[in-house]
Length: 590
Image (cartoon, rainbow, N blue to C red; front, side, top):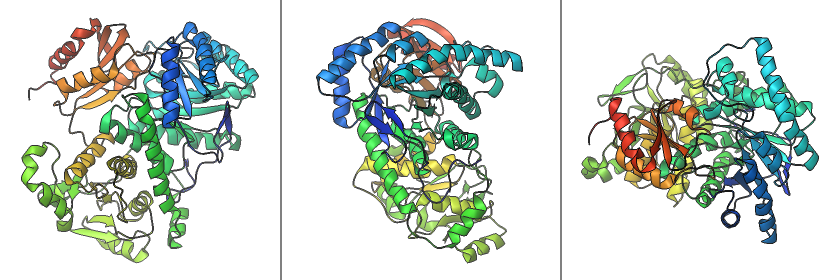
């Protein structure tokens, strides 16, 4: 199954146009930027103020949670106040668990987001086998619950997002397809088939996960499945990494997930979900779009005809739907293993190493491992049959990279290299082949994360070199954080923190900061911090421990996806989390 026409040349995925109020998405329209309010939906004044701030920052679509019918009804007042203020930005009602709230919201907003995992289901983590007849009966029940909303949206010209979340798949899907990209895609397709049967087509898809590898695989599989269904299944796609977190880590994780898909031509709207005030998401999203556009512009350059021949040979089947690290052989360099089952290594230039050599003790885990100029490195043009043939004759593993200055963008170049040379040879990835960089650390971070993260999530790469960021310590930190966010080398505590919204039951930014302060020395421990139960239990499956809002002022603590402590007063909850980590043998003192 193919998810894009070429792994080596950018072409935006063709999609139909969907209308959201006065805004159009998909087709030839620009990739739109959206965000979500953190304010209580019943507080009209705060919602209007925050919406106007988002629009001022460049947000084109604003999502608001509607957890109850009462909240959904207040969307009327929010919309009226925005119109009075001269703002006609499309509003999206975010619905979980409450079909009645969706029906009310569809009277007042331009778009309704439903989550197939909980629109007509309450998640109980039940384990059972469904016969085909029982499964069909479940689908009929969903059809009865979902049809009224589809008909209302159709009558009123309201758009819809069928938005699957990895953390909230239904028990029905979990038992038949598992907690997998396949389950995520099938969950959305079930609802899409109902909409199409009613001749309703004004909808988009999303496949969100906190793990970029899962998120990338789910979106790619979705596109491949839509392609198989037929040309009229060309619905637009909204991209996002859910619970990306805050600060540098949240930006890197978002760039890996969103940026790599955009670079493959997938995506018509995006949201960067940060555990920060929502207005700070917008410049990051716009910078990411800018950097991806620069990357794909490089892929449009005229190149040697040999690559066109390689494209025909190498894209007959898609090798990147599910993560599997490329099977290179290990070689030893300066006492360190590179390739095979060795860690993905961090390489620096000699100049960068000299700049930090006297500070290594202060740099903790962010240590340079190999010096670029000292490597036994083969630098080749992957389009060259002659240079590839030399490596085919080498029986011992050789460390290989793409030569600087060739007219290919890095993602395409390293994919081509991995496809053409024997798998036994480890590969050194680089974040630029043409000394592309800016004076902005954020822009360099987003570009490097997109390029290296995309390749690492494809399973390509045994060492990485960052040169876009000139500051040596910053580039080292960035290298390690990209490896962590891509899930290929865990060296510090990993946090899954959701962005705040009107459902949130505590201050996420303050709480995340307190949890970080108490636990950020726990190497390799994954902690999820969730403002409510919508995705909490499901995302616990990817975390060792979870801190989830259960009720106002009360916290539930999880081990994996199982709740083990309930209704803990918020003032005690961080200390109780530490106790739980100690009880399970994951704690150590600094």
